[in-house]
Length: 251
Ligand code: G
Ligand code: G
Ligand code: MN
Ligand code: NA
Image 1: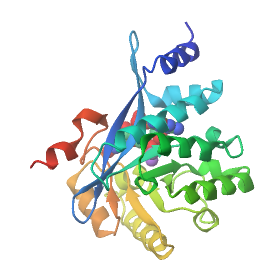
Image 2: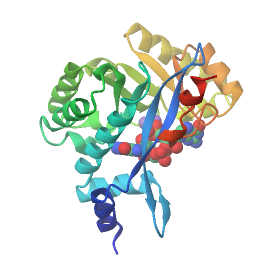
Image 3: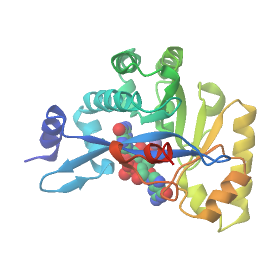
């Protein structure tokens, strides 16, 4: 059977799952929240990676339903965590295609779960900001109006435009993991990271560094002023019943 049809069935059967990756405050080492990442456990194929089923969902038009499922499931899960732990959810540009659509979906997920809006962060990519500027700007303002925050994911390696940082309502930039991984190769990378952090802070935004895999990277990123760290060193994406705050609370 075609994978697209199988994905449709999996979604209808509630067979997708979410894993959650810790987001750690750089200064205190405390977990401040988790990024929700969709996973598809497939009976014959094993775990189908999101890098293949998300684009498939985008091509087949399934992304609206899948995205709404992710939002509902992530908010429902986060509502069970101790406040103020937050949850971050990735949004595809395709979820912004219908005017007013995304804000309705987010509002409903918040209502159904009872999650306080300030505990939800939505991650968008720069490709969203490249086209349809006016409707996207309206949608982001609507979302912000609900009380949720907006993060720019994978910042700095793709179609990055500094104009995005002032033209759009953003609360956070997530530095692409390529910066983290190149820090040790060339001192220029640290200069860029430190400068992005200064700029973001001066613009009232927070900075998360992605892809932290070594203690040296963790220390360098903290020294450069990154607010939040994310990466395999601090925790892999894992099922909701194994999240570290549960054991940290009793430690
Ligand atoms: O979890 P992993 O690193 O394998 O994710 C690969 C890519 O899939 C990342 O770019 C991530 O943002 C994306 N992704 C994971 N879950 C979701 C989701 O629920 N919605 C969207 N739009 N993208 C997701
Ligand atoms: O595009 P986005 O930032 O949403 O992608 C998140 C993905 O990055 C997750 O699917 C996760 O598997 C992956 N990821 C998280 N931490 C690390 C890390 O430390 N190293 C690498 N290579 N990938 C990571
Ligand atoms: Mn992300
Ligand atoms: Na990212």
